[in-house]
Image (cartoon, rainbow, N blue to C red):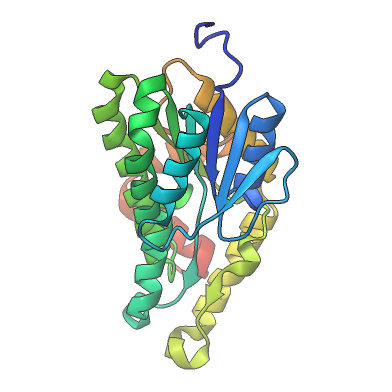
Length: 273
């Protein structure tokens, strides 16, 4: 077997959320490199050379069952990619508990369940896990509090899991996507005027700003390439921004005091300091 430096791709890969967007592009690239790729999603993937498995990340146990069945069939696992995601815009004070809990189930707890199920198989092959997090993990986006919080949790989970598993040959990373031109923009739930109260106009401004940022941002194929390259590195970082622009932005935001970074984000997304 070749060393990781020369290795192009691992044998078996699972992409959760592989039916659209970044996940679909990642599955396609892994398949093109010769991997046996399984997409786990609520909607079956139509990607060529990718085997679709239907499961819901928000329902406890479904991912574990799907991962277990795949690994029983293939005999192991080399790469786990978690790209499932959900978002909504609402005032934090008016957010329905059901929406907040569903978001965390998809964005965070689903990833934790997937790693828990995959870890024994990844250890056996000294595999990799990559979680698709977001630049929002350290960015204040008004009326997007729960999404930002879930991505902060996911990034820290990746860092901590990597610290625990690296001695067993498994590396865990979070890739931070910035604005990315996918259908995620148009699936975002936005609370209406009655639910938002006097914050409705501000919520709509944030909705427009996010749409502009995303649809004018990176193509999902570029983020997918970053994921594949990250998974192939001998010693990958636990957290990595996707692309040079995002990396520079993250560095710049960390160099200024938090109150200035937060004020910049408030003006950028909500149009006010």
